[in-house]
Each structure stands twice: as structure tokens, then as C-alpha cells.
Image 1 (cartoon, chains in turn purple, yellow):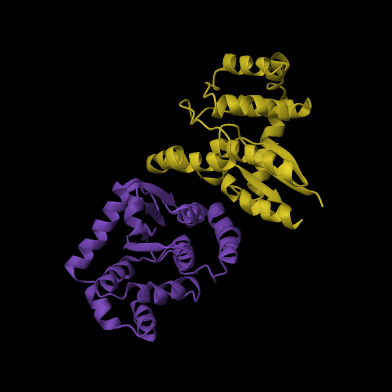
Image 2 (cartoon, rainbow over the protein chains, first blue to last red):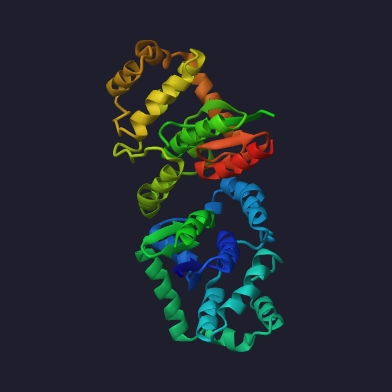
Length: 197
Length: 197
């Protein structure tokens, strides 16, 4: 039986990047349908009075130098902690909504995520983003223009409010039915569900 | 080869309880030597300007109702979220130091941890603690008296400063050599190290 999973993510989160990588691996192995839900992580933090785990210097150092590299090695995926972190991802996440509406979200993420978390590009710079999208064969001009579309802006807000109403306080947050999984480090539980489905 | 692991814990943390349970299971399966290091979690939070994850209401609700029960089920151990949480564990942790010096720390933890995280006793109440220790056949009188010993007090402070100096920002925190593992949810990586040792 195919399992349907809602994946709420922000490209600015390195753990959401790891989840994106791992979920695509799981989709290769199991009958998994991923529903991509771009959100603004800053909006979730604001709504829930939470903050990024790496805002704490000791925790940030541990995550960047030990914890996240361990998971990247386990999944067999590249990861470089981006020196430009944290990046304001408002336009990138609006771009994700625009790409989803244009039917090219997976291609968009396959361009943006590695630029952010492998190549350590400065993704807060609109020109860099433009170049990354163009290099991937996407219509950078149209996607970036669409980030100013009121419907695109509203859809990002709506997704963000939706995930907060479902109990989230950070990203990535995944759901299978009512069951919530916070963090890429809970994808082993997701895999258990997929095995049992 | 026997692997030596430093386990910094506070009995007031439910995730440290889960780690305590899981580490004892791992010790049954692998050549693992656990060095128990009682700390004051509040002191770690203060030193690193961090706070309990459950201080955030949404995160606390998720952890108590979904996340920690999942791990308890995975490990096959009982867990009840204690309604008296958070408990001031200063005397309980001094008691752990005192028990360690008296050579009965493991018995002490086998009494205190279930009282806190299975039977949901009010462990901030000295009389309740006294009863729990007595029921376990421990010398409650002597252990509680020893919590006022300046050397015991100093040892708890010393352990707490030690783990902060090693990069910790919460509990449980474990080390194998220089490698740090934060959280009971990283014991699968610890198990990998044990398998490879």
C-alpha cells in the first residue's frame, strides 16, 4: 500500500536538506508518496516562540561538526555547512511555491538544495539564485517574478499556518496521517511505517 | 575490545531516563563500560544559555505524547511523563554523587529513575525520596545526609563544569573518547561504535 507523507520544509534548514535527501532514497525503496509543503521556518519559530537549534552556540557547533556529518555519512550524501547561514529564505520559499505551481518543484529543489548545502553558495543573493536556477535549466526569470505573485505569497503563509496548527515547532516536520515526525533524525521511524504498510 | 563511555545525566530528564535504560541494554549485548557522571542539568542550561526542549509548549507536547513514547516502545521500557515535571533535582543529583561514593549508584538509579519516570512520584518531596530509597533497601538516611557533604556538593559542580567544558549543552550527553553524542536518540550511533569495536 502506498504511504502518503506530508513533508514541510524550508531550504534554509540543513536538517530539512538531509530529510529531503533521505526521503528521496526512501521513495526509491518503498511505496511512498511525498507531498511537498514549502513553509517559512522563521514564521513557524515566530508563531511557536521557538528558535533554531543552532542559535545556541554549543549546540550549533556540535550539530555542524559532529551530528549532521554523522547523518550525512549514514545516508551517503554530501553536506557542507553553509557559512552564509542563516539565510533569509522568504524568496526561496516563495520560489518553491511558484515552482510547485509550475510543476517543477522537484527540479527546483534539486538545484537549490545542493547550492545551499553542498556548494555553500550565498543563496541570500538574488543574482546567485538566478544563476543556480538557470544552470539547472529552469526558467529563473519566470520563477523569480512569480515570487511576487500575491497568490504565491499567500500560499506560503497558508502552508506555514497549516503546519503550526498541526503541532509543528520547527522543520523538517513530516506527517503520516495524524502521526507527526519532527526532524530528519526521525526518518528511521518513518521507514518502520513504510516497511509495515 | 571494551568500549568506555562517559554518561552525563540528570534524573530529572526523561530522555536521560531513556538513555539509562537503553545503555544498560547495550551493556548486556556489547563490551561496554559505562562511567556514570551525575550533573545538574539546570547548571548546564545556565552555563550554555540553553533551556529544556519541553520548555517550548508545542515541542513539549510532541515529545511527551509522540516522540518519547515511540522510543520507549522501541526499547521495550515503561515511561510515564511525570506531572510534577520539572523537578528540582539538586538533592537527587547530590544523592547520586553520594551513592556513587558509597558504591551503590546503580542501585540508587534503579530506585530513583522508575520512581520518577514510571511511577510518576513527586520526587521534589524529600519524604517521597526517602521512602523510595528505603523501599529499595538503600540507607536513605545516610544518602540524604551525605547530600549536605561539601565534597559531594563540589563533585556535582565539578561534573557539571566538566561536561560543559567538553561541549555539552543538555542531557543526556555521552562521550566515547572525544566523540560526543547528545540525546538518547543518538544511541544508535553509539551502538554502531560498539559493534565496530
